Amino acid sequence: MQSNNGKALAALILGIVGLLAWLVPIIGIPVTVIGVIMGVLGLKSEKFAIAKTGTVLSAIGLLLSLVNSVLGALIGAGVI
Image 1 (cartoon, one colour):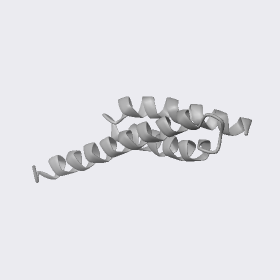
Image 2 (cartoon, rainbow, N blue to C red; image 1 turned 60 degrees about the vertical axis):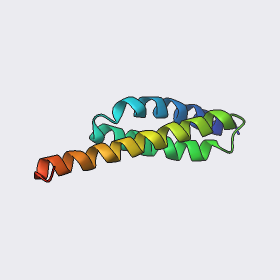
Image 3 (cartoon, one colour; image 1 turned 90 degrees about the horizontal axis):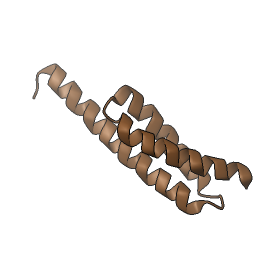
């Protein structure tokens, strides 16, 4: 179970970084995807609450990154 504790903490850190990194989708998307994966793996640890928080923050960052990249593509294509 100890290795999963590290994954829970990694998910939290990546979730926090992902909330800042969404402004640059090429950075935000990989960071938040890894954060979600680590969070899901960390849900089996003793630090369940930290893993859950990291997963939620990463999911929010991923959603923001995807919206930012779609809007950027639409603006670049001249649609908006």
